[in-house]
Image (cartoon, rainbow, N blue to C red; front, side):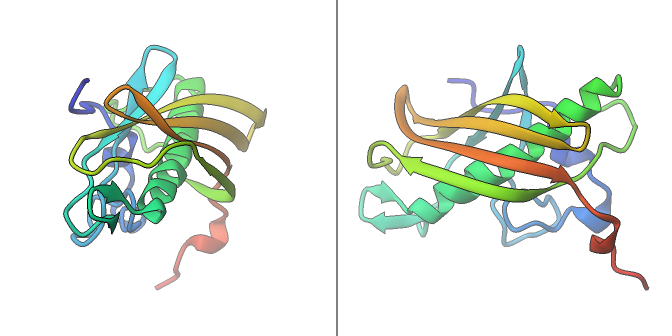
Length: 161
């Protein structure tokens, strides 16, 4: 399994929008999910920490839901950024998305102690709205499926100073 996403969209978010508990690079307490491309699909790889357990040996479902959530919004950002002619690392600020809906199905208990790999397929619904289907694997075992509908972040999310 690849153990690293080299060009992540979250690395390109401006500082004002890099605080998400799931994917914000500036939130020192957060998960730091990072989403990039592998071919036409998106990928996020994450290793849950010791405190992210439901019961000993298994990952807490809320962490898996957060992974699917942030993977979905990051995937939507990647897709619109690519549609606009850019890839991460090209010094152009990508669009930022928020979650309109999140659905998660837990297929099998997710073992703790192995990296999780979220693989996504992005479908454009509207120029500012995308649906992302995600599967989460532990090793090569499918543990969860999810769907995120993500919308471009509204201007009302910006705090005026």
